[in-house]
Image (cartoon, rainbow, N blue to C red):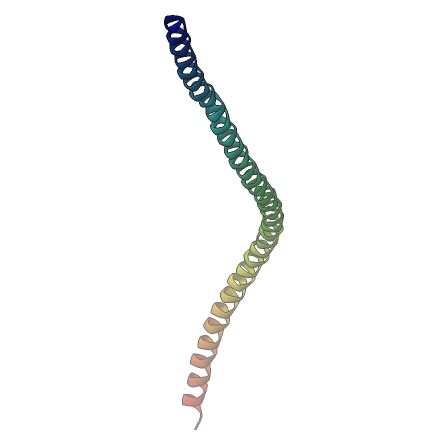
Length: 125
C-alpha cells in the first residue's frame, strides 16, 4: 500500500503541477484578449478623433468655398465696372485728342493774328 500511496501522492503532485501550469496558460489568452480589447478601444478613440478632425476640415473647406464663391462674384462685378470705366476713359481720350487738335489750330490762328497785328502796329505812325 505504501507503493500505492507513493504513486497516488506523485500522481496528485503531477496533477497539481498540471493544474498550476494550465492555470498560468489559461490566463495568457485572457490577458491577450484584454490587451486586444484595450488596443481596440484606443484605435476607436483615435478614429473618433480623426473623424472629428476630418469633419472640422470639411466644414472649413465648405466655408472657404462659400467665401471664394462670394469673392468670385464680387470680382466679376468689379470686372464689369472696370470695363465700363475703360470705355469712359477711351471716350475721354477721344475728346482730349479732339480738344488738343482744336487748341493746336487756335495756336496757329493766334500766331497768324499776332503776325498781322505786329505788321499793323509797325505801319502805324
